Length: 300
Image (cartoon, rainbow, N blue to C red; front, side):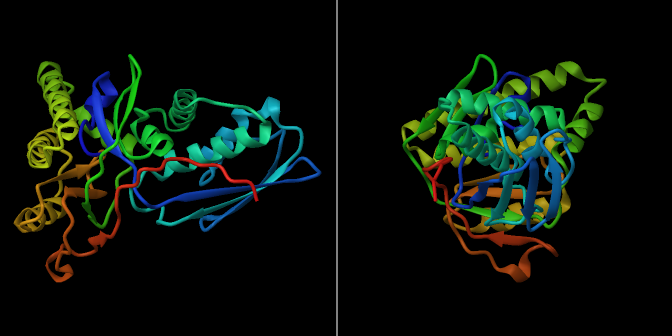
């Protein structure tokens, strides 16, 4: 997430990008009614008649349930990931989109990118109770995406830029972070509304800067929104330490929390290699790049 956190949950815009780390969902049909799931997180076995949302496979099982009327036999699903689930790279959105794509292929259906985004967004929200779908849009479309829930907007930019990402060493679940912000601003609804409007303005100006390839302006706007993230109360001491290191790097044009905060990742516009000895304990730089390609289906 480059711009628009929290505001995107309230009908405003966000700017998000896809990265070159993938989740693979490999489906093999069976002759019986068994559903067998395997991943690095463990294994789970059930049947077509019992597609309960059981962790850690709740997003996969919810997607299977959405396709229940099209499924005639069981299947074996293997999930492989190029990044750990503990790092906040929208793994829930990615595995939902990948499962949705493979189920669509298996059922012989055809979904437009808009239909896929909306269907995957619905599944994610049904499972976790909240979520804008901005991460889903990035997974489906790839590249840098301008997004809004309603009225629906999901527009892909042709431009990419190097980024630096640092995992802060801990992660707070998105619903927990959202609840934290809601409780903090329960007595200040007008202030909260103005913050959301200002974050939205950051996104609008950031998208305009991107389209004219004014990377310096985009980086400055990211840094401005980081100040608003701090005002929301989702900053941490570890994140502050990472931000200070990044802002000292001459190639970094701007840096901020990526996502709901209270841990997770910091993203910077510009690529640099940080001195790990100067980073907070448990923090880790993750070498990634933006990726122009979104979801894809392959038959083997």
